[in-house]
Length: 140
View (cartoon, rainbow, N blue to C red):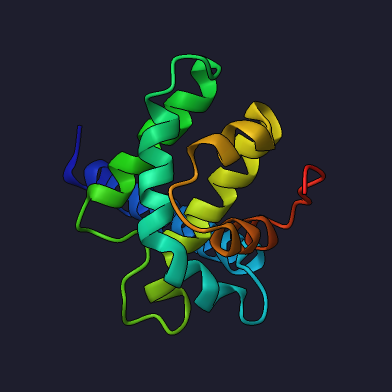
């Protein structure tokens, strides 16, 4: 194979990765919490991380939920951000946005009662979590 083939392949792969990254940034921008909810999400982050760990180790939850939570915890532990911090607004908030999206799916699949049972924070913090995920707590 010629050197030209490898350059063409490298450029194609790089372009595909760049387009995928741009698409992901757009999805995160659309999925981000609106208004003051993003600030609230960042404030809740310590309690949310403890919640994620507790939910991920709960054997009564469906395996798919625990796998999602484990992958999210691994993503949060990696020091390299998906969106670099120099990108305004999304750079610092990508962890909160991705966590919110995963929590929405966890609450839909596992139920709000499971999340409430593992919530380590205050009742006000739980109410903020429900607002953040855009769901409603009918048990209150």
